[in-house]
Amino acid sequence: MIISIDGPAGSGKSTVAGKLAHKLGFVHFNSGKLYRAITAHLIYNDFDLTNISTTTINFPVQLEAKFKNGVQHVFVNGKDYTQHLYENIISVNAPLVSKNPYFRSVIDVCQRDFAKQYNLVVDGRDIGSFVFPNADIKFYLDCAIEERARRRFKELGGTVNMQQLIKEIEERDHIDKTKKVAPLVVPKGAHVVDSTNLTINEVVEELYKIVQKTKRI
Image 1 (cartoon, rainbow, N blue to C red):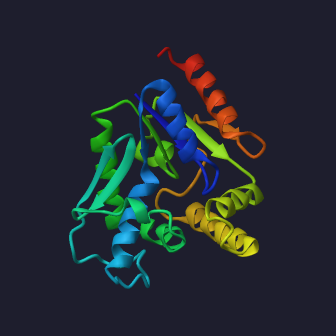
Image 2 (cartoon, rainbow, N blue to C red):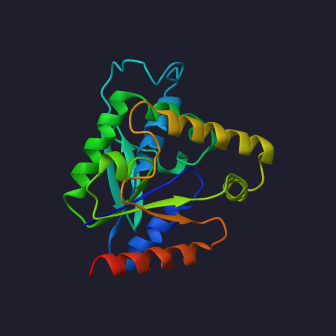
Image 3 (tube, helix red, strand yellow):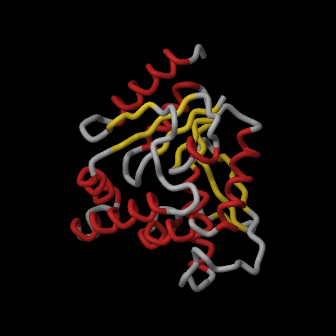
């Protein structure tokens, strides 16, 4: 069984997906970590990210996801990049990498192969609309941009300028929503939940109730 959770950056989808998966006894698969891992691989190997969205890649990328003590680790060409995934430079550049057709194909294959093995809660920006259009249950988690910026500000320990953070998130939203392939949209048939004024646990409970009502697990 596959449950998809889509939504913009900072809407809380990854945290919610993890808690919902735990509550259901499913595996949580974070698709965003795959893009971030490839981005980290490129940056830490001094790859020129100029025009990366349309650059033809001349080297193979082997992508592998493993779970260690309940945590999703992502390996690119054998190296674990998990500890670097949420550095700000990775967050800024990951949307550009996600537009590259080659990286998208590598990531889509990785996700679909993984889904053959487990019951999953998968979160991302094109899960219910593109990667798993036939997901059993789809969610779209929305949130006001100011609240998303506040959450990111807290996550980064207050080390960035709030207005700059809002600007970066707005730019991220624009890139995600205007991609030519698999843009961020509300998937057909998705349950839309606004997390702006809800705690993480309240969102999880809301989604869990919908899952119970929709499917007997």
